[in-house]
Image (cartoon, rainbow, N blue to C red; front, side, top):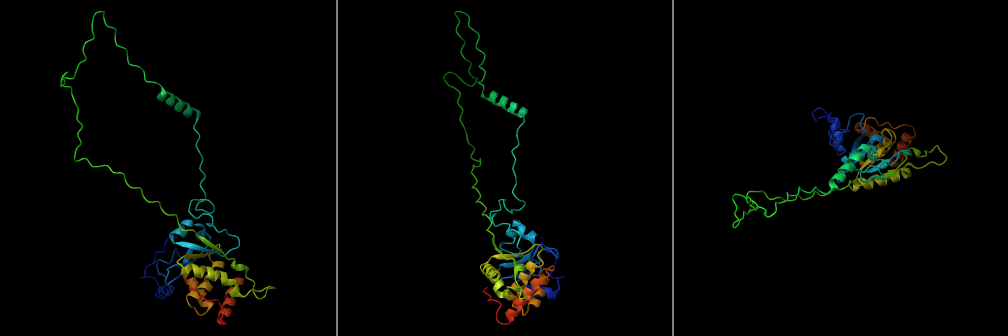
Length: 296
């Protein structure tokens, strides 16, 4: 999850140009190489919110989401949980990083308890009285108390407290302001593989099926919230969602071109089977004048 160690001098000029067309930095946007847990594919030109695509490892890590300012997550699966829907302040609990910590109280041994009781009893016992003075012989008076050499009965010794003017004044440091909690994470569960193609008894138009995805991501990016599209590995389901979204945002002519661009950003994306049928069906509807309005 660390930035890839590339430099502008070694990066392919065509790839650098591609990243700039997506409003991405060609070096820092590549988050970890071929097997990174997530990758950036597009950045909003005004709000600077970023669209990412990745896998389960990225979705589980609240630390990573906070680090990259990701506050919106699209869960493209049917079974993976929305990990941080109930854990919005990073205090452990459901889906927290590392899970909740179980604290156990260490019980003291009987020897320790005995020592503690003895020490407590000793501290509460009254101090022993001083030895009484010896009795005086009959007819004698006690001798006068001895005074210090520098003192006399008429001029007792006095002590004057002096304060050095050079002593620094002590001041109580002001308390640090509390660290604000991280922003909450909002979710859209969008099981993209449940689309019904034309060959099924109840086919669904691709654009109508994808409209909840478009609405959620459009409004999130426009309002400045970075978005993570994720599935288990960040290859097929979230990859298909990334293809149709990037085709809309980057103004790409066809879905095949959009898929090629997504794979430049995240090499492991592979759209096949029913998901490829969904992407193609949406492309046909888009070419026919549909495809959904881009409200971003």
